[in-house]
Image (cartoon, rainbow, N blue to C red; front, side, top):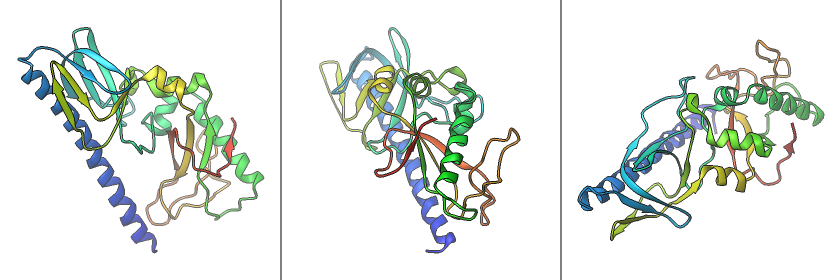
Length: 253
């Protein structure tokens, strides 16, 4: 497959994923707001298999941004009798958590990203990677303190997150006796971070990016990836995931 066709394929996947998440957020808010209306505009209880939230009066998509300009941690806000709750919405096969990439990570834990990049670089050199070689995705396991901070976020990141909602892109629901049951799962964000092993995942932004051992940022931190001949990108993409690929080396840092 040519680089152009690979790019077209990747672009289509990203576009469709973005539309799917928009659909999930919109349908989730609509289900809640319709249930409140059906309940004579009285607060309802939102219920999933793992958690319930009482006193829900309204749901809205979050319209803010991160201080860095990236997508915010919060996707949907629930307005309840006890205050506003921030939700991060994910699909059942969501590839990443804690949005914002490297800029977002630096906002919360300065120096963590650079430490990971240096460890990733050392690992590639140790494995014998040569200039121009294809770079395998790199994974690093996060410790308990760091993963909690990265999952929950903070105000500059468009957080902090109170709950993770993980469910299908098509939201279905039933409403009876003031209780709205939806087909996803709500999990307290602190419990989510505690119950999951979380990993950094570093991957190429473009299919034609290869290993460049001399590439670094202005602080001397290795970039790992060289410039894409087709698109000009010169950095990789760093995300947080709970699903490392099988049979991959997981570095410590």
